[in-house]
Image (cartoon, rainbow, N blue to C red; front, side, top):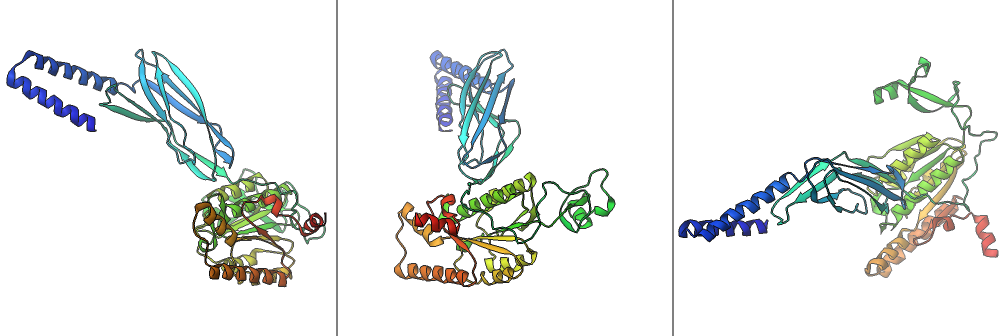
Length: 423
């Protein structure tokens, strides 16, 4: 913009001088300027004509730590060369897709591939290919967008938990079947879209009205040992930042436990207490895995509901033989009491305590912030001891999750931990 203003001022001065003096040399400069500026405009105006461009992503669903590969192709269908083109892909990915400067001859074509790491979970958007060209003097430029946008979902990392096992079911003689039964049983577990041949008495009318298309019920032969995961997303109780935060450790725990339960062919359900997130009904198989991972890819610590309220609302959904996994950094004790009523109903409980004070201390060390006062540190220690005492009083097992340590090493059963200590 500054260069355009400078050239415009110089051109105006030369034109005024040429008209005032009538000097041939000045008129020559005026004609030369008109030719150069006009040629630069024409080159830029037609610089993106007769071009074909596109990109292809090797995946639209990935996990944190994977590499995303994008393949580009730019083709010149004109008989005139394209001396300079900038090709870039705007996106919201954590690592930007690199731009490329290309030059194409008549009927030329160029293809290349770029790779970027997916360092953070989430729902991301890759915009259409943006093409830009200009003249050698930098007076004009032309831009165009080609193709369609793509949505990339990056699932949280799933950790292998070889030393930790889901608590056994309290249902004698029951086991999960890998497929739904075609027969009607008392155990209706999920719904699906209507297909030709489905009996009309299986239509679930409430879901049909909600979805706007016919939905039918699916059944299990027997009651199975479901796993229900409660992920606390109350914003006020989380600590840390980025990968070393209670939020990310909690999401990884939920993803790993859900994957473990689905691998054992259990029904897995989840309640994430964030904004606009409700319970995900129990189901199993690849479809449920995708639902859980897509949900966990988007969750944030943006909830206002206290864990005690979430537990009071959620305990009514739990039945005998289920396993309840609670993942929380909360130091309050009021959410422990709703769990005590579940033990008498045959529900197995296990708590994953994310040590919020330890995550906060680690964050302060990483960012160089001052340590908390002794009074605050002592109050947090008293709250943590009080919470653990309440869990021990009601005989509720728990695991303490600390920062900067692998999850697989922290989730060790008590028997294995005693064995390791004795060795």
